[in-house]
Length: 231
Image (cartoon, one colour):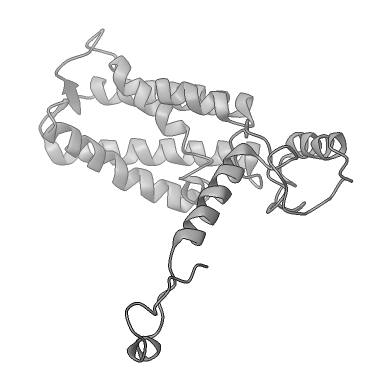
């Protein structure tokens, strides 16, 4: 749940992500309750009630929701891919859980895995429909609390974050730069601290790294004549 909290705190569209987490947790609770009631599996520890899923499993459903608009966006936004992903991923996840000793799959195993496959496929189709409805064409992003570096990022790059872009323009005006300026900035202007540090480290490494001469050029020179040439 700590990772879920960090995700929600850094997400640009926090309210939307909260709704997806709540939805995934509710769907997960229903799916797990059905599987327990039909005798697909039982949990060995961490349960509050034998008829309900343990809290740690519901937390995994909540964590799963944080990937819908990020790493799993290309899967969740396509219903067929989402269905196939759920149909294959659900049984595989519980087979791995049984190997780890977290859950015990009850016989007959084939029917249990089939129920898992169907239920997960339906759940993924539901998630796909919701994500495509609320954010079908918008990508997700995290908040940038360190500022914006205008030495490398242009207007098109910041088009998805109008509030951050406005803050960037105010920073330019504050230090006497006209809006839309695109030059190598000093740390006191609008270049973010992280980009400034990385640029300084890169420049320092570049100036200290000797450039190797071709072997043909070094062959006719003595050891004392070879001077280190800095980039």
